Image (cartoon, rainbow, N blue to C red):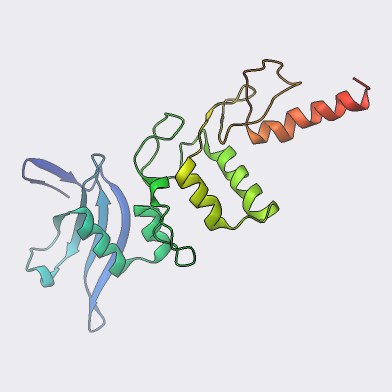
Amino acid sequence: MKKVFSGKMYNTATATELAESDRYDNGNWFSTQTLYRKRTGEYFLGVLGNDSSYHAPEDHIRPLSLSEAKEWAECYVDGSTYEEIFGTIEDEDSGEIVQSLFAGTTCLCGSPKKQVELCCPACKPDLDYRMKEMIVHMDIPATEVFESMASEGFAPAGRCCLCSGNYVLGGHNPAPSNDDKEARCCSLCNIGSVLVSRLKSESNGA
């Protein structure tokens, strides 16, 4: 379906499908509502069937403001799906909002990213590892990790000198795999290459 509203095209074929909900009346299906987001950021519903509660024709499109899209999601999707669409909301335990981590479409390394993702694909492996390291192995509460990242970000972030990925949170010293004093490497290369090289050097008496 596609339709023009106020000079703007809304097209279910080119927009991103975010969530779907079937509507029933006394056990009988009467419509399916699907939440979409355009590449330009606008939200809209694609409605299949007769959504009589809005006195609209069958199979139609209805533009939504951001607040209307959130209200729809609050009614028809679970909390995890809501956060996938709109980002993390207030944590009940800490009372802190870390939604700023998901804001925008630019990763802190400068590369483009999706609105609902924490970082770009190049930064994701290192960020995942560092978060797991802090939350699981260092036993730092997840809320503290997110709060710290929300206030300080992942910077400095940049390209790993040993692979095609990125490092976050400052990266690691790559010596002796790379002796450039300005170079930094990601956590995966640090574990898989740099530390192995250091152990070999130590065992050889270097």
